[in-house]
Image 1 (cartoon, rainbow, N blue to C red):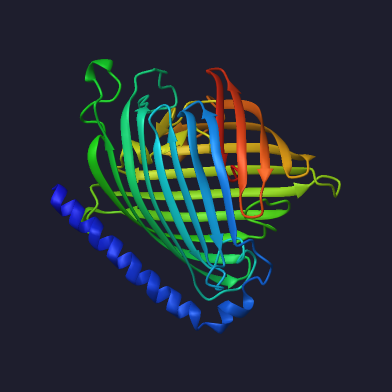
Image 2: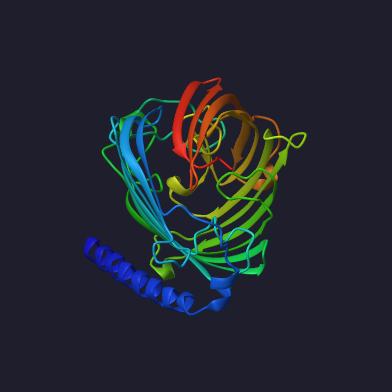
Length: 371
């Protein structure tokens, strides 16, 4: 089994690089993509050291490096290396051609995004399935290896179609079944492989992907996993995410709103279920605190300048999970409030958030706006 998985992953990586080379050659000779993608001046090189504390991963140390437009084709290379006191090891690499920010609200014939990520966490939690799952402090190792690639095309400068291929190898181990939380039959324990094909349509009028101050984004996605493709799972995912950004009184103060609906049908590992709780959803709760097939999530942020490249944010998050979308209502919402800081660089945003909920205080450090 391991030999098959290793062979499959190796072949996939080789095919990825062959495909990447083909896409690069196409864009190299594609005058339309070259002429219409943004001609704005781009920073060639950014390095950002990471020294932080996060409630889920402890004290951490690492760095992020971004190299942009080295080949003069508007491409970008993004690398993150990170380790923490609670045993997280994260290695992340992304290649985009053209760079996502440079192609924002521009017409292009074809764009390609390739991501590879390995994340190991020695102290992860599992709380069960459902909107009322009880809290616990039992922790065990969990890791995943992910390859994600997306091809996109603009129908109009603000209407983008995407096709994606995702491969994720999950494993969870060294847990104690006497905890009566995670069990050997829990979907997603031990080794398992997800292979997902997806398609999406995005309406995106935002003035920036890195730090949007105006515009809207509506994202529709459908993803499918099937044993016939080498996956251990048979499921479908449907997601609608919308967000809106407005300047207040034509000032640098920004109001941002998000609404997210998601439904998963079929069998899926617990790591890929709809979830509430972490630095990207409801920030006052532990990572993966509430899991189920369906999810409703909303967020409100007030973003304001502080000093030069430093900004602040005040936020509210609320959401819940259910077995089916038809079961969703506004009762049983898990909510939080909080504040944060943003440090704005040319090519990315460093983010600090502190969320407060009925289950305590959570502190997060990450990159990029939450939405």
